[in-house]
Image (cartoon, rainbow, N blue to C red):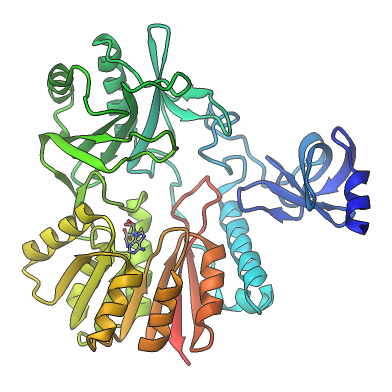
Length: 463
Ligand code: SAH
């Protein structure tokens, strides 16, 4: 009842002074008004503002900056011309060294919220975040939605929570080679008057998304054209023009995403031109990338991340290692020269195919990958008597499945190296594992500069 009264006291449009205490998980500023948490997009830790209430929820308030009273010394002008409308980046207005500091702080707060330990405890175990010397043009993949407006074709990202597509000519966190190809494809699509899927009208036909991925080292590119239904309009002409204009595009793939949802890819993929995969290289290790396979978006920081994985795994050449949630086998192939045996599993069949292709090319007889979920495959191995010394897990945002956690606790490897892209699920999983494992150290690595995403590598050792 008390809560309700307090809640009712704040009204939309109301203004009050607010001190921003920290960053929220979406990069917004967080402060407190009469003990209620207030989220203010664009505000930075340390700033004094006048907040204007936009929405009132039972336990939180959404507000906007009505006026600054004291700006942060770390506030900078965002260099991107689309920054105010585009939802892709959240922290361009914060100086890069402050981004690293604040994202580390966000990690500590999240760990404290979902575990029994406080921030001071986690602070001692967590190293400074490793950032980039040049935190721009790092992304190796662009996924732009397309939209027809009159005779023009737009390609870019949707403004946050809206149907307004921002036509992005140059996205400064992406490798410029991606923009060049995307814009070229858009021009060709427009000239050929290829039909575009209309989100509002629905319907069955047309191009939805243009995905371009580049091998940073090889310079080879892969183009994926996503449509709503089976056919890619004017396919032959399109392929001819794209391949003539962009000889670096070595692979063109058609994917069908029939559902209305926001998932970029659907289940059906067909190779239209060139090779199924393109090549990437990180620290002299070769990787094969097919269109549907996950691959880290920031190759130069991936090197930093995997060096940490290698250091934490402490391999001597004899260990049995699991590479769980393996993608194209990136971590296992990295660790292969230092391990006795490596087994990995991954749900996307094409990614497993890419991993095993590299395993064969390297002539490794001690490395193998199979298709399946970690929570099914790992218990299956364990039942057959396989006992790993080190397990590396690199799950998607949702974290580890309960079955996976139970099997880890039962099989009890000496070390678990947990690569996490979501501090909240990391914290919950660390808590679940705490009956047998304790966190030895945490190394955050900035994989996504200018955004609020936090990635880290955690060493857990058996108690
Ligand atoms: N380790 C890889 C991939 C990490 S991304 C790298 O560093 O590149 C997480 C991967 O887990 C994705 O490839 C995704 O397809 C896969 N995945 C998602 N759910 C899974 C599950 N339940 N079991 C196994 N793999 C899963």
